[in-house]
Image 1 (cartoon, rainbow, N blue to C red):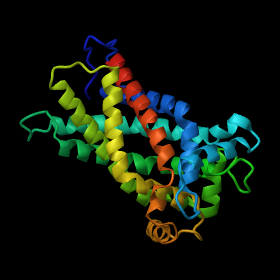
Image 2: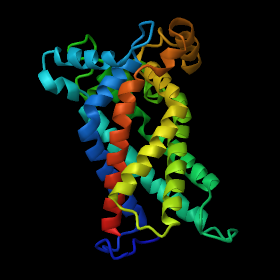
Image 3: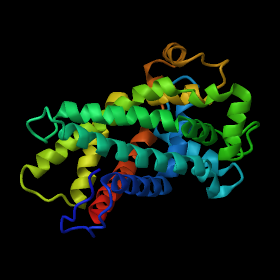
Image 4: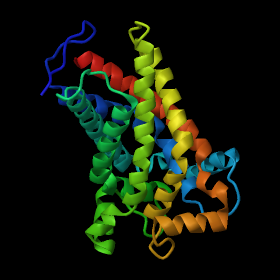
Length: 299
């Protein structure tokens, strides 16, 4: 297994590359979730809203006000923080580790004449890492979605993360932990496109001989995230609906697509887009800024 190299910018701890990627991913997931959790809560509640008609930006403020009126003050905006934090740290730590190792395997394959990866290589490795991460972390995201979609005093609302897991297993059995996995697989395409755009933008920037700085990480990650988000947002709405509602509401992803289109129109697939755009760009910029600098420090 490869070890991190001291490039003159880091401390040269001599850690295996997998450990560097994992630690950097865990750190990025922790800080980005800590800062952006309230916007994630608002986005989730808008996504699972089934009322017809578009929800404009004013709805974002209304959801925030409603959350504050739930009786816990600003703490209400941090409901579901534990599963969100666990999920984010686990996902980013696992994803960056798998993605880094897969890129190394592909670049060093004997059949290759160059270690430089192509757009197809980035897309394939990001997709593989995304699929594995989605399967392993899906139960965490189900609990997180259901906690964020309800207030603490809602009948049947989960009290905490472990209670949520137990409730799902008792109600739906172990298979219940995999609800929403199909749309999550479609969501892998979002991360794959994002990383493909990001890696190509980094390659383009470094071709000019530039040493990437924090400003570069922020700008390049924002551009990549925006492009990927515009392509793949509807799947997030479908995933949130399937994971949050009982089987009597939606029979599955296909049924959710049909019913959203029939009852809410095309705009129904973009509910929560405004707070999502507000959330994902700061979240992404923080994630990649922390990841890249942590990785640089540890190498």
